[in-house]
Amino acid sequence: QVHLVESGGGLVQAGGSLRLSCEAPGRTLMPAAMGWFRQAPGKEREFVAAIRWSGGTEYADSVKGRFTCSRDKVRIMAHLQMNSLKPEDTAVYYCAIKDYGRSSWGSWGQGTQVTVSS
Image (cartoon, rainbow, N blue to C red; front, top):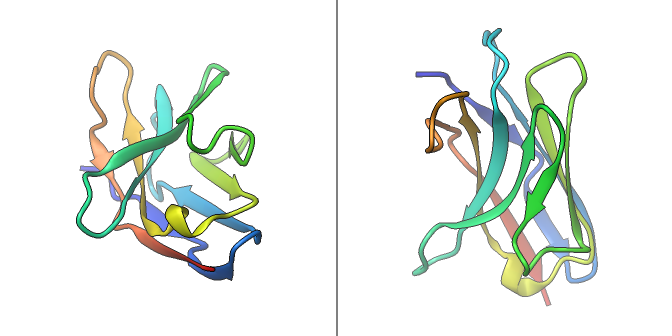
């Protein structure tokens, strides 16, 4: 199973910004998509954003207009730019990969903590 490495989490005040990155070191096979999910304490993991390698992005309603998902043009790497952060964005953020021909996300990172203080 491909190991994904997330980075960029941290503590920020409400209204601030953070940029998360997710890399798949050693992977050479282009994915169909890379996605971002988050899980807050006591809550279910939820979808945040995704980018298709062929182009196109998708966002949860709660982050539209504030978060931007992008990908590196050379490496298998994705980024999540998070602006206008709110305390309710506090969660562990995970990235995942979906391969062509698969309907589900097959590889996951270890997660990175994002904490937004009010």
